[in-house]
Image (cartoon, rainbow, N blue to C red):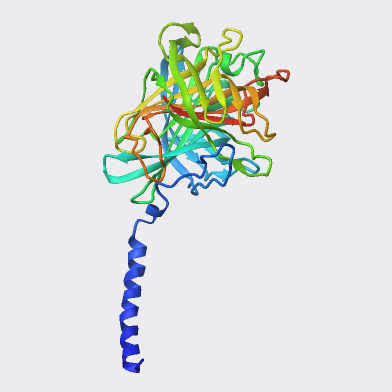
Length: 423
């Protein structure tokens, strides 16, 4: 090779390298991260897997505190909600913890705080109205024991049980992280709910018994913006067969890794009755008793139980919180509810290797509508997902062969099982 040719080649390579570097610098880097599976899929039952999720950022969200009395809206308050970046919980399969802080949106005064437990359930993609590039969502069932520095008579959204020196307030619901595949920017949505005394402070079942708010309930919701405001409303739950998705346990298997999810083969989601449970009345229909059961491909199953009025749950109890109204930001015009109930759960892939059946109390969220769920070649769903999502995590679990140990609820407990389905 001659010297003149070598110099010419160098003169060509240098600007080419600059061009390639420039293209990489301005290319939407999130493209490589988006529409990616979480690693829980497997065609073989109880297969060890290595799940992989992105790093989720901290969030600062304009939010709203919402309060009801006798299932009727009583107050709405502007809030600011901060979530620290989720960090993995040691020894658990895709469970995270995050610091939650709720403050007054006007003067910044702190209202409530707690360490929130985030149990990852699943991921999917959605089409958006602002362009051809989809977004990918990762959903977490959420639960948190909240305390408040407020010492005077509490106002919405602070329940009296959360005041310093009294007790804690158990909130539950869900948290979403949505990644724009074109810009690489995350958006966050959050719905947390605190029920009335019968569901949280029951004198027989609760870890924090007492008489605090017999007919009052509370919620924290974000985002709440001018572009996409959140409006409290009663939205009845959907009804249908369960054609997707799966169930799994959260604790590592015998070799210390995570097990694959068990796909749901069949099941139903059937509302049976609506009304108000705080106090008992047929109207307004903010709550619904929903029969939910399903069977997995590996022999696992779940079925809601009705022991009411011995326990506060009539099957799976859903509570309607309200809905976002526009496509201005994630999650679009989507209705949000929370769900809790006592289920009998059969785990086909427990750490012991022997199928186990347990009584589990589940908590989580339900969303209906929003942006169109889009099929993804890298996250196969057959048949395609509907736009109705139910994601719940256990907070109490006891083998059916073991004695029931009290208390049953009132504070954050360990997570053993997850159910995430689409009616």
